[in-house]
Image 1 (spheres, one colour):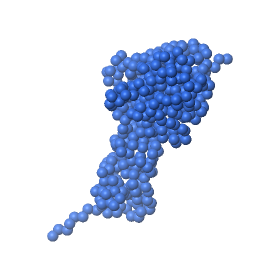
Image 2 (spheres, chains in turn orange, brown):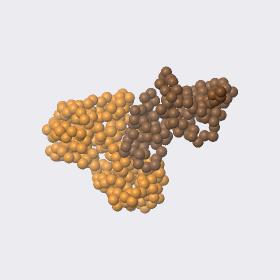
Image 3 (cartoon, chains in turn red, orange):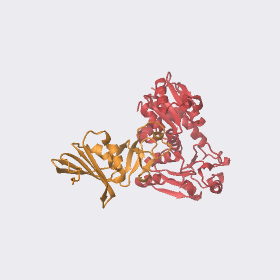
Image 4 (cartoon, helix red, strand yellow):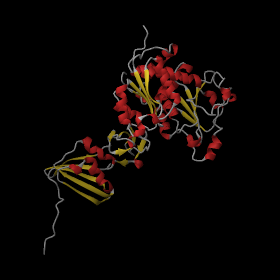
Length: 306
Length: 152
Protein backbone atom coordinates (compact mmCIF):
# COMPACT_ATOMS: atom_id res chain seq x y z
CA UNK A 1 0.00 0.00 0.00
CA UNK A 2 3.09 2.20 0.07
CA UNK A 3 2.66 5.62 -1.49
CA UNK A 4 -1.08 5.28 -1.78
CA UNK A 5 -3.36 8.07 -0.68
CA UNK A 6 -6.41 7.82 1.54
CA UNK A 7 -9.07 10.14 0.13
CA UNK A 8 -12.23 8.09 0.56
CA UNK A 9 -12.81 5.03 2.74
CA UNK A 10 -13.64 3.15 -0.47
CA UNK A 11 -9.99 3.49 -1.49
CA UNK A 12 -9.24 0.65 0.93
CA UNK A 13 -10.46 -2.91 0.52
CA UNK A 14 -12.06 -4.65 3.49
CA UNK A 15 -8.83 -6.60 4.08
CA UNK A 16 -6.81 -3.38 4.05
CA UNK A 17 -9.19 -1.79 6.55
CA UNK A 18 -8.86 -4.78 8.87
CA UNK A 19 -5.06 -4.54 8.63
CA UNK A 20 -5.19 -0.87 9.63
CA UNK A 21 -7.48 -1.69 12.56
CA UNK A 22 -5.13 -4.47 13.69
CA UNK A 23 -2.19 -2.08 13.51
CA UNK A 24 -4.16 0.55 15.46
CA UNK A 25 -4.71 -2.03 18.19
CA UNK A 26 -0.91 -2.43 18.44
CA UNK A 27 -0.58 1.33 18.86
CA UNK A 28 -3.20 1.31 21.57
CA UNK A 29 -1.02 -1.10 23.54
CA UNK A 30 2.11 0.92 22.90
CA UNK A 31 1.39 4.41 21.59
CA UNK A 32 4.86 5.96 21.61
CA UNK A 33 7.05 4.38 18.94
CA UNK A 34 9.52 6.42 16.91
CA UNK A 35 8.77 4.64 13.65
CA UNK A 36 8.73 7.83 11.59
CA UNK A 37 11.93 9.33 12.99
CA UNK A 38 13.37 11.80 10.46
CA UNK A 39 10.15 12.09 8.46
CA UNK A 40 8.35 15.38 7.84
CA UNK A 41 4.57 15.41 7.65
CA UNK A 42 2.66 18.43 6.36
CA UNK A 43 -0.68 19.29 7.92
CA UNK A 44 -2.49 21.71 5.63
CA UNK A 45 -5.68 23.00 7.19
CA UNK A 46 -7.34 25.26 4.64
CA UNK A 47 -10.18 25.54 7.12
CA UNK A 48 -9.74 25.28 10.85
CA UNK A 49 -10.54 22.01 12.61
CA UNK A 50 -8.83 21.97 15.93
CA UNK A 51 -9.98 18.53 16.99
CA UNK A 52 -8.86 16.73 13.83
CA UNK A 53 -5.61 18.64 13.60
CA UNK A 54 -4.64 17.92 17.21
CA UNK A 55 -5.45 14.26 16.76
CA UNK A 56 -3.22 14.04 13.69
CA UNK A 57 -0.43 16.04 15.26
CA UNK A 58 -0.58 13.90 18.36
CA UNK A 59 -0.31 10.78 16.17
CA UNK A 60 2.61 12.30 14.24
CA UNK A 61 4.46 13.30 17.40
CA UNK A 62 4.05 9.89 18.97
CA UNK A 63 5.63 8.38 15.88
CA UNK A 64 8.60 10.72 16.13
CA UNK A 65 8.01 12.66 12.90
CA UNK A 66 8.08 16.44 12.57
CA UNK A 67 5.09 18.56 11.56
CA UNK A 68 5.08 21.49 9.13
CA UNK A 69 1.98 23.28 7.91
CA UNK A 70 -0.70 25.77 8.78
CA UNK A 71 -3.87 25.64 10.83
CA UNK A 72 -5.89 28.12 8.80
CA UNK A 73 -5.51 29.88 5.49
CA UNK A 74 -4.89 33.35 6.87
CA UNK A 75 -1.31 32.26 7.62
CA UNK A 76 -0.65 30.73 4.19
CA UNK A 77 -0.04 31.97 0.67
CA UNK A 78 -3.58 30.90 -0.27
CA UNK A 79 -4.62 34.39 0.78
CA UNK A 80 -2.28 35.72 -1.91
CA UNK A 81 -4.30 33.81 -4.48
CA UNK A 82 -2.18 30.70 -4.85
CA UNK A 83 -4.06 27.78 -6.37
CA UNK A 84 -4.40 24.46 -4.56
CA UNK A 85 -2.45 22.94 -7.43
CA UNK A 86 0.60 25.12 -6.76
CA UNK A 87 0.40 24.77 -2.97
CA UNK A 88 0.42 20.98 -3.26
CA UNK A 89 3.25 20.96 -5.81
CA UNK A 90 5.39 22.95 -3.38
CA UNK A 91 4.47 21.14 -0.20
CA UNK A 92 5.00 17.63 -1.57
CA UNK A 93 8.63 18.52 -2.20
CA UNK A 94 9.01 19.58 1.45
CA UNK A 95 7.36 16.58 3.08
CA UNK A 96 6.94 12.80 3.10
CA UNK A 97 3.17 12.86 3.47
CA UNK A 98 0.42 15.48 3.35
CA UNK A 99 -2.58 15.62 5.65
CA UNK A 100 -5.09 18.13 4.33
CA UNK A 101 -8.45 19.56 5.19
CA UNK A 102 -10.17 21.79 2.67
CA UNK A 103 -13.68 23.25 2.40
CA UNK A 104 -14.01 22.41 -1.31
CA UNK A 105 -15.34 18.98 -2.24
CA UNK A 106 -13.03 16.80 -4.31
CA UNK A 107 -9.99 18.89 -3.37
CA UNK A 108 -8.27 15.95 -1.67
CA UNK A 109 -8.71 13.65 -4.68
CA UNK A 110 -7.32 16.38 -6.90
CA UNK A 111 -4.38 16.95 -4.54
CA UNK A 112 -3.62 13.21 -4.49
CA UNK A 113 -3.31 13.31 -8.29
CA UNK A 114 -0.86 16.22 -8.21
CA UNK A 115 1.19 15.15 -5.20
CA UNK A 116 4.25 12.92 -5.41
CA UNK A 117 3.74 11.88 -1.77
CA UNK A 118 0.67 10.24 -0.15
CA UNK A 119 -2.24 12.51 0.73
CA UNK A 120 -4.55 11.83 3.66
CA UNK A 121 -7.92 13.51 3.41
CA UNK A 122 -8.81 15.07 6.75
CA UNK A 123 -12.16 16.27 5.40
CA UNK A 124 -13.08 17.83 2.05
CA UNK A 125 -16.22 19.90 2.53
CA UNK A 126 -19.32 17.75 2.89
CA UNK A 127 -17.70 14.92 0.95
CA UNK A 128 -15.38 12.51 2.78
CA UNK A 129 -13.54 12.21 6.08
CA UNK A 130 -12.09 8.69 5.93
CA UNK A 131 -9.94 8.81 9.06
CA UNK A 132 -13.08 9.56 11.07
CA UNK A 133 -14.72 6.52 9.51
CA UNK A 134 -11.67 4.41 10.29
CA UNK A 135 -11.76 5.40 13.97
CA UNK A 136 -15.51 4.73 14.06
CA UNK A 137 -14.86 1.25 12.69
CA UNK A 138 -12.10 0.74 15.24
CA UNK A 139 -14.43 1.79 18.05
CA UNK A 140 -17.19 -0.49 16.82
CA UNK A 141 -14.92 -3.49 16.48
CA UNK A 142 -13.30 -2.85 19.83
CA UNK A 143 -16.59 -2.57 21.72
CA UNK A 144 -18.46 -5.32 19.87
CA UNK A 145 -15.55 -7.70 19.25
CA UNK A 146 -16.53 -7.90 15.57
CA UNK A 147 -17.80 -5.88 12.62
CA UNK A 148 -20.18 -8.48 11.17
CA UNK A 149 -23.98 -8.58 11.47
CA UNK A 150 -24.42 -5.59 13.77
CA UNK A 151 -27.52 -3.45 14.21
CA UNK A 152 -26.46 0.16 13.73
CA UNK A 153 -28.71 3.06 14.74
CA UNK A 154 -27.93 6.45 13.27
CA UNK A 155 -29.58 9.47 14.82
CA UNK A 156 -29.92 13.17 13.97
CA UNK A 157 -28.77 14.86 10.78
CA UNK A 158 -28.62 12.00 8.30
CA UNK A 159 -28.95 14.24 5.27
CA UNK A 160 -25.83 16.37 5.49
CA UNK A 161 -23.73 14.38 7.93
CA UNK A 162 -20.78 13.06 5.94
CA UNK A 163 -19.63 10.89 8.85
CA UNK A 164 -22.88 8.90 8.84
CA UNK A 165 -22.77 8.44 5.07
CA UNK A 166 -19.19 7.15 5.08
CA UNK A 167 -19.79 4.93 8.09
CA UNK A 168 -22.95 3.52 6.55
CA UNK A 169 -21.12 2.73 3.30
CA UNK A 170 -18.25 1.15 5.22
CA UNK A 171 -20.43 -0.94 7.54
CA UNK A 172 -22.44 -2.20 4.57
CA UNK A 173 -19.41 -4.39 3.80
CA UNK A 174 -20.09 -6.43 6.95
CA UNK A 175 -23.78 -7.18 6.61
CA UNK A 176 -25.07 -4.54 9.00
CA UNK A 177 -28.73 -3.73 9.62
CA UNK A 178 -29.46 -0.01 9.80
CA UNK A 179 -32.02 2.02 11.67
CA UNK A 180 -32.23 5.70 10.78
CA UNK A 181 -33.80 8.11 13.26
CA UNK A 182 -34.13 11.68 11.99
CA UNK A 183 -36.52 14.57 11.43
CA UNK A 184 -38.33 14.57 8.10
CA UNK A 185 -36.15 17.36 6.72
CA UNK A 186 -32.90 15.55 7.50
CA UNK A 187 -33.61 12.00 6.36
CA UNK A 188 -31.02 9.74 4.77
CA UNK A 189 -30.79 10.71 1.08
CA UNK A 190 -32.35 8.40 -1.51
CA UNK A 191 -29.04 7.55 -3.17
CA UNK A 192 -27.74 5.94 0.03
CA UNK A 193 -30.93 3.99 0.64
CA UNK A 194 -30.74 2.77 -2.95
CA UNK A 195 -27.17 1.70 -2.28
CA UNK A 196 -28.33 -0.48 0.62
CA UNK A 197 -31.23 -1.89 -1.38
CA UNK A 198 -28.89 -2.90 -4.18
CA UNK A 199 -26.78 -4.78 -1.64
CA UNK A 200 -29.89 -6.44 -0.19
CA UNK A 201 -29.29 -4.91 3.25
CA UNK A 202 -32.14 -4.06 5.60
CA UNK A 203 -32.81 -0.55 6.83
CA UNK A 204 -35.65 1.03 8.76
CA UNK A 205 -36.56 4.70 9.11
CA UNK A 206 -38.06 6.28 12.20
CA UNK A 207 -39.05 9.83 13.00
CA UNK A 208 -38.49 9.58 16.75
CA UNK A 209 -36.76 7.68 19.50
CA UNK A 210 -38.78 4.79 20.82
CA UNK A 211 -38.20 1.45 22.53
CA UNK A 212 -36.82 0.37 19.19
CA UNK A 213 -33.36 1.34 20.44
CA UNK A 214 -33.43 -1.76 22.67
CA UNK A 215 -32.32 -3.63 19.54
CA UNK A 216 -29.25 -1.51 18.93
CA UNK A 217 -25.65 -2.68 19.09
CA UNK A 218 -24.39 0.80 18.26
CA UNK A 219 -26.19 4.15 18.54
CA UNK A 220 -24.37 6.70 16.42
CA UNK A 221 -25.48 10.20 17.44
CA UNK A 222 -24.98 13.35 15.36
CA UNK A 223 -25.68 16.99 15.88
CA UNK A 224 -28.84 18.53 14.42
CA UNK A 225 -27.62 21.94 13.30
CA UNK A 226 -29.88 24.93 13.30
CA UNK A 227 -28.50 26.27 10.01
CA UNK A 228 -29.69 23.14 8.18
CA UNK A 229 -33.30 24.18 8.54
CA UNK A 230 -34.97 26.49 6.05
CA UNK A 231 -37.70 27.18 8.59
CA UNK A 232 -36.47 28.09 12.10
CA UNK A 233 -39.80 26.97 13.58
CA UNK A 234 -39.12 23.46 12.28
CA UNK A 235 -35.81 23.46 14.13
CA UNK A 236 -37.45 24.55 17.37
CA UNK A 237 -39.94 21.71 16.99
CA UNK A 238 -37.38 18.97 16.47
CA UNK A 239 -34.37 20.11 18.46
CA UNK A 240 -35.42 18.34 21.62
CA UNK A 241 -36.82 15.23 19.97
CA UNK A 242 -33.42 13.82 19.11
CA UNK A 243 -31.82 14.11 22.52
CA UNK A 244 -30.55 10.95 24.16
CA UNK A 245 -31.10 10.77 27.93
CA UNK A 246 -29.87 8.27 30.45
CA UNK A 247 -33.41 7.15 31.33
CA UNK A 248 -33.90 5.98 27.73
CA UNK A 249 -31.04 3.50 27.98
CA UNK A 250 -32.71 1.22 30.53
CA UNK A 251 -33.77 -1.53 28.14
CA UNK A 252 -30.83 -1.34 25.79
CA UNK A 253 -28.55 -4.33 25.20
CA UNK A 254 -25.58 -4.77 27.56
CA UNK A 255 -23.11 -4.64 24.64
CA UNK A 256 -24.66 -1.46 23.22
CA UNK A 257 -22.35 1.56 22.97
CA UNK A 258 -23.08 5.18 22.09
CA UNK A 259 -20.80 6.86 19.58
CA UNK A 260 -20.65 10.49 18.48
CA UNK A 261 -18.11 12.17 16.15
CA UNK A 262 -18.08 15.20 18.53
CA UNK A 263 -18.43 18.06 19.20
CA UNK A 264 -21.76 17.51 20.83
CA UNK A 265 -24.10 20.30 21.79
CA UNK A 266 -27.16 19.02 23.59
CA UNK A 267 -28.07 15.88 21.65
CA UNK A 268 -26.58 13.65 24.33
CA UNK A 269 -27.63 14.72 27.79
CA UNK A 270 -24.67 15.02 30.16
CA UNK A 271 -26.37 12.49 32.45
CA UNK A 272 -25.41 9.86 29.86
CA UNK A 273 -21.68 10.55 30.23
CA UNK A 274 -21.23 8.44 33.35
CA UNK A 275 -23.16 5.50 31.87
CA UNK A 276 -20.71 2.72 30.86
CA UNK A 277 -22.51 2.58 27.52
CA UNK A 278 -21.26 6.08 26.66
CA UNK A 279 -18.21 5.62 24.48
CA UNK A 280 -17.71 8.94 22.63
CA UNK A 281 -14.70 10.18 24.56
CA UNK A 282 -12.83 6.87 24.23
CA UNK A 283 -13.83 6.99 20.57
CA UNK A 284 -11.96 10.28 20.18
CA UNK A 285 -8.87 8.77 21.78
CA UNK A 286 -9.05 5.85 19.35
CA UNK A 287 -8.63 8.44 16.61
CA UNK A 288 -4.99 8.92 17.55
CA UNK A 289 -4.22 5.18 17.29
CA UNK A 290 -6.02 4.74 13.99
CA UNK A 291 -4.28 7.81 12.52
CA UNK A 292 -0.91 6.40 13.63
CA UNK A 293 -1.80 3.19 11.80
CA UNK A 294 -2.94 5.05 8.67
CA UNK A 295 0.26 7.12 8.50
CA UNK A 296 2.47 4.03 8.87
CA UNK A 297 0.41 2.08 6.32
CA UNK A 298 0.64 4.79 3.65
CA UNK A 299 4.36 5.25 4.26
CA UNK A 300 4.95 1.51 4.05
CA UNK A 301 6.40 1.25 7.56
CA UNK A 302 6.65 -2.19 9.07
CA UNK A 303 5.25 -1.89 12.61
CA UNK A 304 5.85 -5.46 13.71
CA UNK A 305 8.15 -5.79 16.67
CA UNK A 306 10.54 -8.72 16.53
CA UNK B 1 -32.93 33.80 -67.19
CA UNK B 2 -30.22 32.60 -64.93
CA UNK B 3 -30.27 29.06 -63.69
CA UNK B 4 -30.78 28.87 -59.95
CA UNK B 5 -27.45 28.14 -58.31
CA UNK B 6 -27.44 24.83 -56.61
CA UNK B 7 -25.29 24.01 -53.62
CA UNK B 8 -24.04 20.52 -53.43
CA UNK B 9 -24.89 18.92 -50.11
CA UNK B 10 -25.30 15.72 -51.94
CA UNK B 11 -23.96 12.33 -50.97
CA UNK B 12 -20.31 12.05 -50.07
CA UNK B 13 -18.05 9.56 -51.73
CA UNK B 14 -16.16 8.46 -48.62
CA UNK B 15 -16.56 9.46 -45.00
CA UNK B 16 -19.03 9.56 -42.14
CA UNK B 17 -22.58 10.85 -41.89
CA UNK B 18 -23.85 11.58 -38.41
CA UNK B 19 -27.62 11.67 -38.42
CA UNK B 20 -30.33 12.19 -35.80
CA UNK B 21 -28.53 14.86 -33.82
CA UNK B 22 -30.97 17.05 -31.84
CA UNK B 23 -30.86 20.39 -33.70
CA UNK B 24 -30.16 22.39 -30.54
CA UNK B 25 -27.05 20.32 -29.85
CA UNK B 26 -25.48 20.49 -33.31
CA UNK B 27 -22.81 22.95 -32.28
CA UNK B 28 -22.03 20.97 -29.13
CA UNK B 29 -21.40 17.91 -31.28
CA UNK B 30 -19.14 20.00 -33.53
CA UNK B 31 -17.28 21.21 -30.48
CA UNK B 32 -16.93 17.81 -28.80
CA UNK B 33 -15.60 16.19 -31.98
CA UNK B 34 -13.38 19.19 -32.68
CA UNK B 35 -14.83 19.55 -36.19
CA UNK B 36 -14.13 23.27 -36.13
CA UNK B 37 -10.44 22.40 -36.40
CA UNK B 38 -10.80 19.83 -39.19
CA UNK B 39 -9.42 20.29 -42.69
CA UNK B 40 -11.89 17.83 -44.17
CA UNK B 41 -14.83 18.96 -46.22
CA UNK B 42 -17.77 19.13 -43.84
CA UNK B 43 -21.38 19.94 -44.57
CA UNK B 44 -24.15 20.13 -42.09
CA UNK B 45 -27.82 20.81 -42.10
CA UNK B 46 -29.91 21.79 -39.14
CA UNK B 47 -33.55 22.30 -38.20
CA UNK B 48 -34.53 19.50 -40.54
CA UNK B 49 -37.85 17.80 -39.95
CA UNK B 50 -37.67 14.67 -37.84
CA UNK B 51 -40.56 12.59 -36.60
CA UNK B 52 -38.52 11.36 -33.66
CA UNK B 53 -36.65 14.49 -32.58
CA UNK B 54 -38.83 17.32 -33.89
CA UNK B 55 -35.90 19.21 -35.35
CA UNK B 56 -32.78 17.32 -36.17
CA UNK B 57 -29.35 18.07 -37.54
CA UNK B 58 -27.07 16.07 -39.80
CA UNK B 59 -23.31 16.28 -40.37
CA UNK B 60 -21.40 14.87 -43.32
CA UNK B 61 -17.65 14.63 -43.01
CA UNK B 62 -15.73 13.62 -46.07
CA UNK B 63 -12.82 11.20 -45.83
CA UNK B 64 -13.04 10.82 -42.09
CA UNK B 65 -13.75 7.72 -40.01
CA UNK B 66 -14.01 7.92 -36.24
CA UNK B 67 -12.85 5.52 -33.56
CA UNK B 68 -15.75 4.26 -31.43
CA UNK B 69 -14.25 5.83 -28.30
CA UNK B 70 -14.13 9.22 -30.01
CA UNK B 71 -17.60 9.12 -31.42
CA UNK B 72 -19.17 7.84 -28.19
CA UNK B 73 -18.20 11.11 -26.56
CA UNK B 74 -21.19 12.74 -28.26
CA UNK B 75 -23.59 10.31 -26.57
CA UNK B 76 -24.34 12.82 -23.81
CA UNK B 77 -25.67 15.44 -26.23
CA UNK B 78 -26.87 13.21 -29.07
CA UNK B 79 -27.93 9.90 -27.52
CA UNK B 80 -29.96 8.84 -30.60
CA UNK B 81 -27.28 9.71 -33.16
CA UNK B 82 -26.79 7.22 -35.98
CA UNK B 83 -23.62 6.91 -38.01
CA UNK B 84 -23.43 5.88 -41.61
CA UNK B 85 -20.01 4.85 -42.78
CA UNK B 86 -19.69 5.64 -46.49
CA UNK B 87 -17.29 4.11 -48.96
CA UNK B 88 -17.71 4.67 -52.68
CA UNK B 89 -21.10 6.40 -52.16
CA UNK B 90 -22.40 3.26 -50.44
CA UNK B 91 -23.35 2.89 -46.81
CA UNK B 92 -21.06 0.06 -45.75
CA UNK B 93 -21.78 0.17 -42.03
CA UNK B 94 -24.29 1.69 -39.63
CA UNK B 95 -23.46 2.46 -36.02
CA UNK B 96 -25.25 3.85 -33.01
CA UNK B 97 -23.55 5.77 -30.22
CA UNK B 98 -23.14 4.17 -26.82
CA UNK B 99 -22.79 6.09 -23.56
CA UNK B 100 -19.26 5.32 -22.33
CA UNK B 101 -18.45 4.13 -18.78
CA UNK B 102 -16.13 7.04 -18.08
CA UNK B 103 -16.62 10.60 -19.29
CA UNK B 104 -13.55 12.83 -19.34
CA UNK B 105 -14.09 16.52 -19.97
CA UNK B 106 -17.31 17.37 -21.86
CA UNK B 107 -19.64 17.60 -18.86
CA UNK B 108 -19.68 20.05 -15.97
CA UNK B 109 -20.16 18.89 -12.37
CA UNK B 110 -23.40 20.36 -11.03
CA UNK B 111 -22.02 20.65 -7.49
CA UNK B 112 -21.09 24.34 -7.03
CA UNK B 113 -18.70 23.32 -4.23
CA UNK B 114 -16.77 20.86 -6.40
CA UNK B 115 -13.07 21.53 -6.99
CA UNK B 116 -13.63 21.27 -10.76
CA UNK B 117 -15.66 24.46 -10.55
CA UNK B 118 -12.86 26.31 -8.72
CA UNK B 119 -9.61 25.31 -10.37
CA UNK B 120 -8.58 24.27 -13.83
CA UNK B 121 -9.28 20.59 -13.44
CA UNK B 122 -10.48 18.40 -16.30
CA UNK B 123 -13.76 16.90 -15.16
CA UNK B 124 -14.08 13.15 -14.92
CA UNK B 125 -17.18 11.09 -14.24
CA UNK B 126 -18.15 7.48 -13.85
CA UNK B 127 -21.46 6.81 -15.61
CA UNK B 128 -23.70 5.25 -12.96
CA UNK B 129 -26.84 5.16 -15.11
CA UNK B 130 -27.02 5.09 -18.88
CA UNK B 131 -30.77 5.11 -19.53
CA UNK B 132 -31.40 8.43 -17.90
CA UNK B 133 -27.80 9.58 -17.74
CA UNK B 134 -26.37 9.96 -14.23
CA UNK B 135 -22.72 10.85 -13.74
CA UNK B 136 -20.75 10.42 -10.53
CA UNK B 137 -17.99 12.98 -10.18
CA UNK B 138 -14.54 11.44 -9.73
CA UNK B 139 -13.62 14.33 -7.44
CA UNK B 140 -16.54 15.38 -5.23
CA UNK B 141 -18.41 12.04 -5.65
CA UNK B 142 -21.73 13.84 -6.21
CA UNK B 143 -24.18 12.75 -8.90
CA UNK B 144 -25.03 14.96 -11.87
CA UNK B 145 -28.30 13.88 -13.50
CA UNK B 146 -29.51 14.29 -17.06
CA UNK B 147 -31.70 17.29 -16.31
CA UNK B 148 -28.79 19.13 -14.67
CA UNK B 149 -26.26 18.17 -17.27
CA UNK B 150 -24.28 21.05 -18.75
CA UNK B 151 -21.73 20.63 -21.49
CA UNK B 152 -18.50 22.55 -21.06
